[in-house]
Length: 371
Image 1 (tube, rainbow, N blue to C red):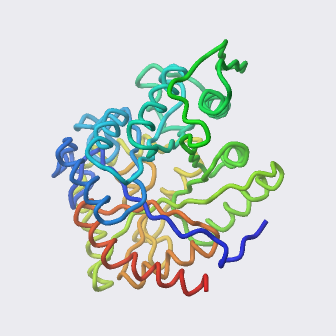
Image 2 (image 1 turned 90 degrees about the vertical axis):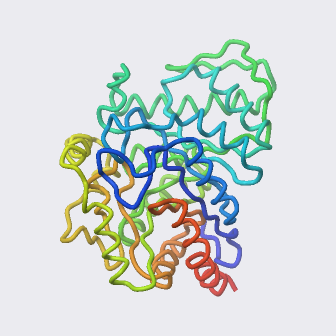
């Protein structure tokens, strides 16, 4: 079902917590700004002060932006601590099913949700980075991880929303008269799911509240959305759409491109080799799409994937002036995307830049089309 622009919700804009570290250089052996709690708190409070709706906190088992042995903030502990020093902004916490007992996770998430005043959502990551699961003793194929993730979501929803005690019988998870206290009920965390493969899109069509895609050229994103809607129509479930991208915004376009190139100018060969090994032969469709080869890493006029040389997962950025980037994001909004997860290096300064220079222009453009 197509919803007219006038009836679409207000767009949501989220920011990102750099648990790998931060700075204006990526891919060096160590970050200019290590991911200490004091620094990540500054990022979170800046995003809240700038009016962002939520913050994505990724999940890793090794550093994914600098050398693999560089300092890394653990996801769940970090999110919990940041919730205590903020009051309004939400947390979109990435979770990989299979690494924590289901019942314990459901209780932890429910407690976080209550303590934070209902500010938790969950980004389920079924596939993961190549060899990342294996380094901590988890060995399973790609299909198994998606099947397990589906049961994980179903069982969590049962514990959070059904009358207790709860029973659930799956191939990977079983509940026998289980309880979850506190139980969020109808205010339970929402599930975000990503991925570009048919399996990922099918899982989103069946289970996601929001399907989250990494930025690609507009025409490729349009095809992903069409494929998702085809599966969503078959399930009868409407799925909201989100987009994840980095930003490199400057007052002058050439300055923006120079800043983008400088991000990876000092990247260490060891880090590039580590990232290449995570991509080579991966079954993840989205990860391969992020790292596709292009002259000067330019996938489109303002879309650059140079960060894929040094960063796992989303490695593409929109590059240009505030007006140019606003126009680019408007094109994705026209496809039906209503939530945008943004980031820029360094995350404190670029959070201010995005909030002050980009979002007012983008909101104005969207409002004009909604009228």
